[in-house]
Amino acid sequence: MAQAAFFDLDKTVIARSSTLAFTGRLYKAGLMGRPALLRASVSQLIYVLFGAGEDQLERTRDSLLKLTKGWDRAEVERVVEEALEEIVSPIVYAEALFLIDEHLREGRRVFIVSASPEEVVRPLARYLGVPDVVATRTGTDAKGRYTGTVEEYVYGPAKAAAVERLAAVQNIDLADSYAYSDSATDLPLLEIVGYPHAVNPDRELREVASERGWPILEFRRQVSLVKRLARPVPIISGATVASAVGAALLWMLARRRKKRR
Image 1: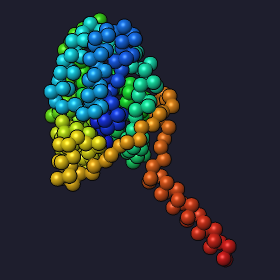
Image 2 (image 1 turned 90 degrees about the vertical axis):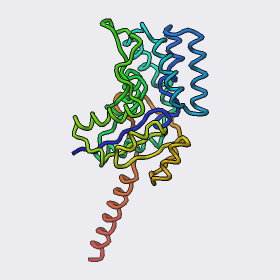
Image 3 (image 1 turned 180 degrees about the vertical axis):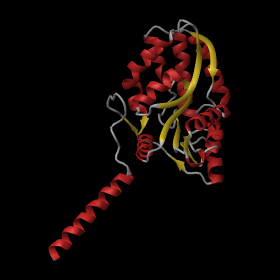
Image 4 (image 1 turned 30 degrees about the vertical axis):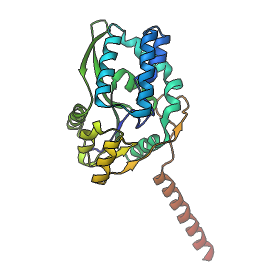
């Protein structure tokens, strides 16, 4: 069976809310007005300073559903794609990129798993070099316009259930897989894998992780990325460095033995 690594997105791979980060560009594109932009900006500030509880996330989701009703999905995807370099590049955690690269080098499948809409998560993940995502799917009509409904909300227990279904279909061994998240709302996800990790954890998750002996990681270094088509410039991993150093030492020892002979 295959191994995998599942990364939450907001405050785990990037430092902000992925959905709210694009509100400025959506405003410029004429998809939202000034009042909505102001509310989104306030929500972003609260999220950065205090995190987001379940009630706040529910309110944000419902308000976004009302706001986006009638929007063209293809237009939203276009705005997100065009804004990736400006919006996402400066807020990616270097430590997350390193871990993603490390898992890929070890032959594991890597997934971004997020409650944010798929049309935001998928291009963002592709920009980071992660081809696979599990994300919220919103309803659209025959013309590709949002209906204000949700087909699948990938949040809390539903996020874990979506990953379990994926694992069953794609023959992934969850007991031998990894998960990373910052929020206690993702405890159901962290509990179904063999190697859970708390990243920049909120208070509740930090307490649980400490009690259960889970690794607690602090991501702080935000890096600016160059534009890419498929995946990020590879980050040299610790294992790669160790292998290179070991090979160099063996080569030097072999040369010395030859000289002695």
